[in-house]
Length: 357
Image (tube, rainbow, N blue to C red):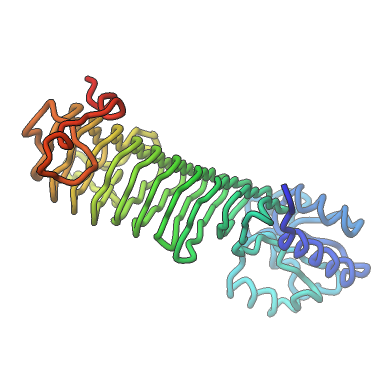
């Protein structure tokens, strides 16, 4: 690896210098316990936390934890370190409590910034445990901790595409991939895997927390939308062809309640299901919708404006709303319709693999 981008690490060091310069003889009070931050402050400043503070009354029952209001009017006795992303209300409360930013407290939290990696700066690590390994030009925005992004060779992320990685997310994009949509969102503990030589157009990708999306090698997607929903999985096989305005819905989006039975009829209670599975070498026609808990067999074709829901066999044609099988034992080719029958029926070994039962 040729270099390490240290913008975030430098910012953390600067914050430690501010603490060291301004704390004087005051006690160091940290909002919420965090050993990682405490160790960093001690290593850079030689200062240990004297106490903690919180807005949570339960946490304040601990002997070493004050309620935040107990610090107000005592900026001469305490120097405060804030660990959470904070809002205007927090700022106003500290200001009314007699605390000035930097002079009496610092905001010690992650600053979301776009990391620009390329073949010269292809390795990034920060204080929060995030790692970027890339062999291509890429823009990554880390929104949390302990995420890993791996980008292969000759990957083209067009339209200034930004990959947003939340806490503990895993993102892998293989070689020779092209993506044109300007934003990919990957939530907490979510996983995104895009195989080799995949081509994705204006197709919105959002992998929600604990969700998983896998796209196989050589799959092409024109445009549309996929949002996994929480704790849901979508697996798309290799060599698939998606047309325009495709919508993939692994979840209902909102809860539906049965008034008589007094239960939610679409709540998975946190169970992870294989929500949508699309086999290898499937052709998904224009304006199609793929609904939750659907399996489309290898080598199958989804007709124009089809709404697929349920389990469908290999090598079939599916049409209608809801989708129904109208023909079986078929195979299809990417090449356009031709008058030359020698082209139409020249099924090579690669295609034969997709026609096996």
